Length: 362
Image 1 (spheres, one colour):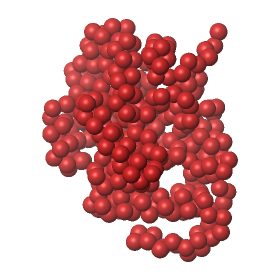
Image 2 (tube, rainbow, N blue to C red):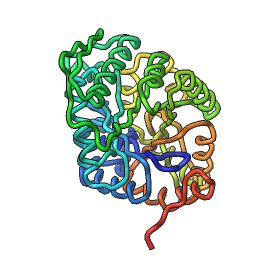
Image 3 (cartoon, one colour):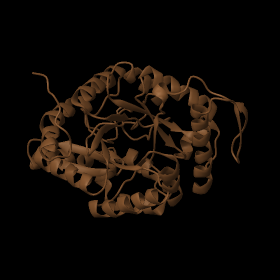
């Protein structure tokens, strides 16, 4: 995550069965450990900055039980970090489900495994049907992010304070809290959040290093990024804005668009998509889904990058120009499709000045 690339790139959701694509296509992602490890090696060798997992506890049903099988993200991250050299691997953690004293120790362990390459993606609230498995009830956004801020404050305190300390908040009351070892190398893991509500974005700007921000169109994304940068500047905090996309790249635009229609329309797992949308009760999400059904089937409603290598590289450059420092993307089958991205899209991004030239084998 500390490269000089203007646009950081990462892979999103490979720890879950089907990745982020709710399709019945037989070639959809099979999230075995062997496949994840092979993908991490490819991404690391190609110079990608990060891998970001989804924290999932149950599937979305449908014909494929979309994301019904998934690896727990901290253990997954440790395994990948121990077998790579440069790439950052995030763990995604639901703060209401894990006590911050335990979590801080867990994250430091991953950080030492990787000599400082672990990243934390903190989630303050999500699907109530998953939280029901833990006996945890949902709260409104202000409460969720208020708890999240205290949670992050405790974690940072355990990372930074040499002496035992007390903490008295609304959600956590600790006595004599201490954590050793400290994070690797005198730094700390980077922290990311993808809050979309005003409370969520305020939390991310105040407490995190990276904020994920989705948008319906690139122009809307440009406005949102500018607003978030202004909010961070007012707090004198350097916060980088990232986004997510689903990527289908083929030698020609017509081939990419045909495959997009095939996997995310003709044979999409629509029951699973309906279940995924239903767990979020916000009317705005339902309205966006009704207008952008294919985007939800292809990748959680993320930004579509569909086309030839020239098309995709040009669009990624536009995302960078809109004020985004990074982007993570999902593929229908990561191992099958990533080598083409590596060989055709990344060199074009170098020529466009969005990423630095890297040394290639041979």
